[in-house]
Image (tube, rainbow, N blue to C red):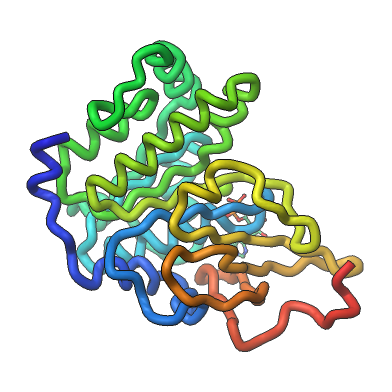
Length: 263
Ligand SMILES: Nc1ncnc2c1ncn2[C@@H]1O[C@H](COP(=O)(O)OP(=O)(O)O)[C@@H](O)[C@H]1O
Ligand SMILES: [Mg+2]
């Protein structure tokens, strides 16, 4: 990656722009960090992680930032039609090369990690994610990358936790060294009352965002929380979020539920 390292300049204000794709998101933080950071977006299925990521990339790409969406689950066609559903037309952005949506087979990632188990060489290559590395080498101007979701890889390596940990460490190191904002999506079966840090992901990411699909009686409501933000002040509260026909909006000034509804 030596070539692309050289050509990757720190883009001032870039980080702030990664924040503005979702109305209300930046209000969860006080100020903005000075460099590109890594996010972990964790939440149960259906909590809005994919919509959050697509919306963030769509808006960043519209501002001229080159973005890459790496899907390990859904096909790129499905994600593109998902974007259209919310009124975000990715086609011109894709044509201009500002947005790339690629599907990578998680089993290929797993096989590749397996092959390189005994020869993990830090800084030289990223086992398992050479596909991403190649895409980034081909386009050194890519500034934001989403990986949706890492849980697929984790599931394949259920019995090899140490290998998974090493892999993730390399992944986060790689993006930090190359000055790329990284969003790693992780599936979890969390609910606000029982969340506890569960993996190495929480330690590696600079910012950990939790997304919830909370049950209140016979209804469900969406919510979001900044669980951790390295070196930044942030709201320490679960705040309401709505998924509507034009995407996600966050309402930091509203309450999700009254205390008596928290079990
Ligand atoms: N067009 C839409 N309008 C409003 N809400 C939607 C729409 N499409 C999906 N949703 C909501 O978003 C949820 C799925 O969000 P998604 O980002 O795919 O979840 P995750 O990636 O966390 O599994 C659905 O369960 C549904 O509640
Ligand atoms: Mg998803």
